Amino acid sequence: MKKALITAALLLGMAGQALAVGGVADVTVYDRAENRTLPVYYHEGRYYVAGKPGNEYQVNIRNTQPGEILGVIAVDGVNAVSGETANWNQTGYVLSPYTAFGVKGWRKNLQRTAAFFFTELDNSYAARTGRPDHVGVIGVAVFRKKAEPPVGISRRQEYFERKRQAPAAEESAGEWQNKSNDEMAQNSRSDAAAPPASITAPQPAPGGKLGTGHGQSETSVVRHTNFERASSTPDEVITIYYDSYRNLVAQGVIRDNTRLARPNPFPNQFVPDPR
Image 1 (cartoon, one colour):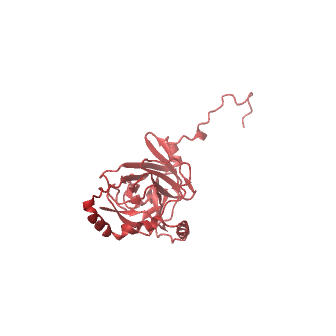
Image 2: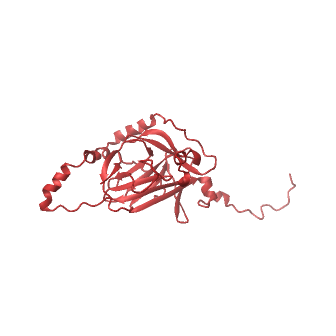
Image 3: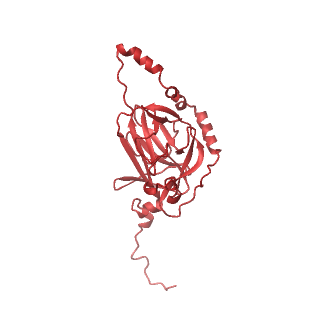
């Protein structure tokens, strides 16, 4: 059994009409400052989103399957839960069937996260911890849960004994998934009043490559649970690259129609005097 983190509450109203990326799970990037899902651009086999320097964001993961899944999330090559250099064998978030969760930041403990925000490369969490090589990418490795073998009549007692001895954390995990709308609204209000972290505040990036910073402390309650993966390799790896709008235009990822205007060879009939 591998320990993982189970989401505390469902993500309500994943706003926006932008495309999600993925199949076993859907992944979108939500700009919390502008209250919108960032549009996805497809270019040369890769998916991109344009981030705005200084804006906080979250990574929304939706389970499209009838069974539980585990999502191991990496931002800039760093595991968003453990802070380790990312590897898909590490810990992640467990989602119940057909539910969704918004990962708002770097997990600090079972109650709080430090907000993701777009910032210049040098101020990114990865760069500030000596790991700048993979800044500019979000990854989610998705695992299906191993199916339990059918229980025969001769093993009935063994089955119930095993259930009785199951970890308390696994049995109580559903309490967090069944929070009422009022409780979740209260959590949102408490997030707004959360004390700021003692790290550098979000700073705009003047035009360089974007990374993800380690922002203000926020409430995000989860619990441990057990999750046995059906395979040692992910069922799906979802990859979304990001940079500023300006940089993505320069790279040819985004076609900026305002810059494609064609000059008119005959704008006037006569020759005017020069200024």
